[in-house]
Image 1 (cartoon, rainbow, N blue to C red):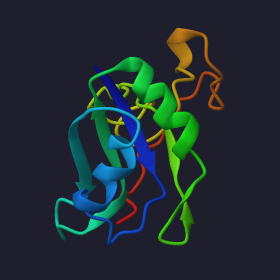
Image 2 (tube, helix red, strand yellow):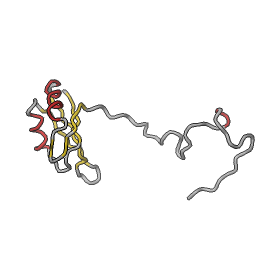
Image 3 (spheres, rainbow, N blue to C red):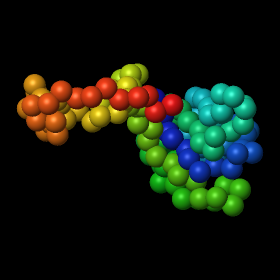
Image 4 (spheres, one colour):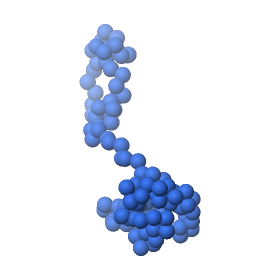
Length: 122
């Protein structure tokens, strides 16, 4: 089983249009067109699962860069989505950047002086 990423497809593309393109190269298990969660509109890419790895390789070679609805399709092997930490960006909630304070050996512009409290910016 090989999962293929199909990018740069027109937003109007349907499974019925995409499936035959890949079935010409081998058996297709599933076609999944990715849609926007809020609007339900296509996001312009899809995933195609093919049962045979050799057929998937042939489909990539044949279809990558080919025209679909006036757009050159991008077809390659799908990579697993990278996990995000789910938390705020590095540096904490309010930015900063992880350089550390006086105790961690980071640069401290107030050398020896207490920092004055600041008013909130909002």
